[in-house]
Length: 255
Picture (cartoon, rainbow, N blue to C red):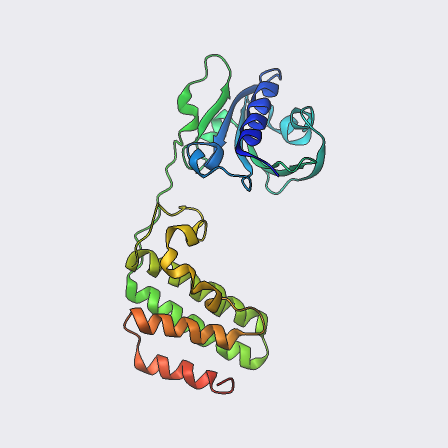
């Protein structure tokens, strides 16, 4: 099992290895190894950016010896043109991207922490120049309407035999809208991840955590999940009576 100390030590070692390599400019820690180290635990991975001089990007993506010099690799996978997922044999998992300094100007990310930088590189390199600007939050009425219609369409697909599609409409799309509603209507501890709302949701909105298993009962229980979603919406919000009855009608074969 990893420890926070082990993970931070490995990240520091990566920075030290980069300091010996031509073209490397900086290593930026992100997320729980960046500015949110209070979240770091045994289940965290290493999220980071490597910033390099112009012309060096391909070299650092194709030759991962700057990682394997520290410990053996178990697996690596180039998941984007800029990035890679990498697993060490000792269980340390990395998700990283390599950017040339000019590319960093267009990258959208949360502010990070400079783990290592070359002489003359500004600490501001860990601060995004292009802010993440989400649009205005949707109205509660829109979220309720989306959740209800997602459930309705999902039930139709379930009855048609498209259970996988039904599961996504009921147990994913509708539940996504419930997460947004719950963050507004129930006490939330801490800020949401702007890139991934479900991250740490159980800790942030514990009042809803106990109901999540009923919303997400699995591939074979779409209608049961639909009834649980409807019951929650009906308990906390104003649900259109016609849509409520339409959903209950589709659930009758199960009831």
